[in-house]
Every structure is written in C-alpha cells, then in structure tokens.
Length: 112
Length: 113
Image (cartoon, rainbow over the protein chains, first blue to last red):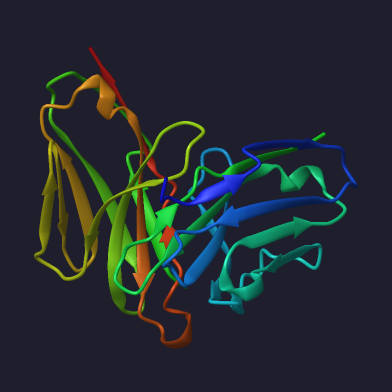
C-alpha cells in the first residue's frame, strides 16, 4: 500500500493524559500536513512540514500540541494534558512536487 | 482571510436525479480549488483540482466547473454509492503560506435507491 498511513485509527484517553499519533506519508512526498476535523466541519489546518522543517503552525496549535518530522520521513503529533475539546479526527496529508494532496484515514481521538 | 462556503449543507436525491453542489470562495489569489469525497470515518479522497476560471474536469458521474467566485460539482444520474460528504477546498497564492488547504464544511449527499 503506497498511501498515507496513520496510527492508531482510534484512541480513547482520559482527560489530562498525553497522546501521540503517527503519520507515515507517501515515501516520495516531501511535504506533510496535519489537519483536525470535528463533527460536521471541514478539516482545519494545524501544521506543515517540508522535509524535516516545520514551516507553519496554525493558531489552533496551542502550547499543548507539538509535532515533529525527524529526518523528513514519518511525523508524530503529540497532545499533552488532553482536554475534552481535543476530541476530533486528526488527519495527515502528504504532497509531492507534482502530485495533489493525499490524506490518510485519520486518527479518531476521544477524550473522556 | 480565505473563506469557503458550501451549499446546501445536505442534499437528498433519488437514484438517477441529477443535481449540483455549490462552493463559493474568497481568496487573495487562487492557486487551486480542490474537490474531495469523504466517507464516514475515513479521510478525504481526492476527486479534482481546478486551477483557472472556465476549467472543467469530469470523472464518471461527476463534473467540476470553476468560475472566479465559485465552483460547482455536478452529479449526473447519481447512484446510492455516490452517497458521501463532498468537501471543497482552496489553496491560496499568498506568498509564504501558499501551501495549506482551506476547507468548507462540506455537503452531505444521500442518494436513495
């Protein structure tokens, strides 16, 4: 499968716990994006990497959120001290120089 | 700030009943307009990219068109398997931040047999 992979698919956590999600982009894509989608809304941009450099972060990305992309390969998104408002679908997308954006299936986070 | 508005929010059709979904947008400079299909619990699936007014693209029962202010997704003789949420997104040509997509809220399409 050469698509974008996200792990885990579902995560249930207690409020205050830390969670980490992983995204494996299409191997030849150097651009990687994280989006968040809540019920009935379109995806909202969180952050963008070109290779290993994080070039843009949305105002939605509070201090409790951190993202990394070591060596320009896979990426992780960590949420510290989760809150109920963090419950959402977290989507990863990758893009090469000549291709459109390809999204993964997402990680559904539920904070209880 | 870039804005994308999709209408209607929900659309229910009978199988074979053609219709159109609307996406109106406000951007400083359009680099590309994207249409995606999203099934429940899954990520968006790419359908089309349109780059300039007057451009049209087709795929099976779907046809996307673009003007300077809006895009339409025309669905001809839909089938129940076309039921999904259709998302419209724009990529703005705004200097250093011209990479991300700004999405509308989507149109939930239901096609009844």
